[in-house]
Length: 343
Image (tube, rainbow, N blue to C red; front, side, top):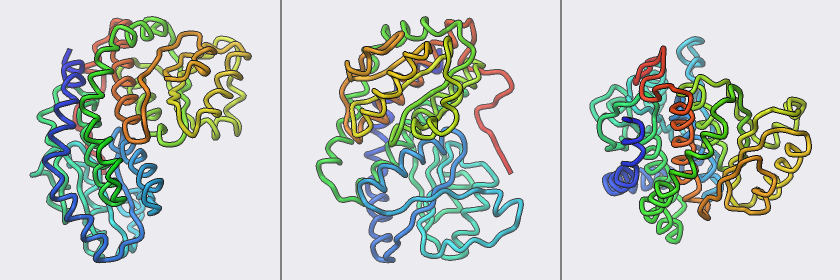
């Protein structure tokens, strides 16, 4: 399978992305400090938006710099003139061809924002529109679903965040990520077991919290596009404000629950879902949380840097194997193309 080949290439892809972009990343950080920029705005669609959400969390946690999200229709549909002059605008797009994303960056640069493009194509319109370009260096994508490019986006975005934070211990954790991804490849039989356990289901509620929200959203997206399953992600805290009413016997919940500051939330929702008779499928390194799983998989321990990468690869492998168990082709989902261009 093409998707599996791309997933298995992620250790090399992440290594290359980090090495290739370190110099330009440090130039961006110098520009941020020289201009005393205090705000970051991100823009992306689909998996790129989800990678951006991970970047938002890691950046705000480690640097204290607020990170907001631009909505392209404000510019492209409503014709607004948004003042990003004191912002760094980071636009994330695997192809770099989405017209609406380019429009936002064009306007931001004209209004003197510090603009950064994150793409897998240095010749793309988005890469050309921005002042700086972080090149994913992921090679040509063949499967429709974004996997290796998602990992590469996480790599260059996390590198940017860690250089802004200037934390040497976190830099070392990031450099260890490629080797740690092999731990997930070794767990493929367990991931496939989890996929077999859920393959008859057509609807999923995906839950997590904090820095894992971008990964939870991308898992729901992959279950949508590769498995044709109606899947919705919720932050656990948002889930308690209304959607909790959805829980009843037979509802399918997928919980991403790395041991972290959010562990008590994971334990609480796993307990509640179990008591209400839901099918609870849990990926976690916490035995306490896994005790409440209908089916669970023991994950490697992670830290604030590695968790997105390890759970991200696991989520993508899980969705791929669910599709396979359903008799579907995850490489070429119906109605979709590898490059999506929106206006």
